[in-house]
Image: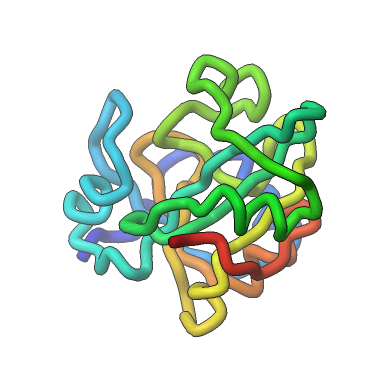
Length: 163
C-alpha cells in the first residue's frame, strides 16, 4: 500500500478538512497527466471498491451538480437527476471543468470547489468505514470517513447514483 506523504504542500481540499477538524490520510503518486481512477488505485495498490471518483454534471437550466461514485461504477444520469430534484443532467464538457471547479480532470474533488455545488455521494459509501477520494490535484488521494465527506462537501447526501 502507498505511504502517507508528509512533506507535500497541502491542497485546498486538505486545508478545508483541517479547518473542519476532519481526520484523513494523504497518499501521493507520480503522475503529470490524467489517469483514470482504476489506474490510480492500481498505482497505489488500493482496493477498487474503496476508491471513489468525482463527476460534475449540468442540468438544462444550467444548474451544476457533483456526484461521487465508485471508480468502477457507471453514473446513472436519471438516478442522479432524481436525487437532486431536476428533470435531467448531463456530464459537463471536460474543458469546462477547471474554470467551473478550480480542479483538473483526474484531480477533481467535491471538497473546496470554486463555487458550491450540491453534492451526492453514492449510497455504497455508507457501508464503508473509509473511502479514498481525490485530494484536489493529480497525484493525490485522501482517505477519510464517508460521513466526513458529507460534512465538508456542499449539501452532500447519500443517494443511489449508479447502474
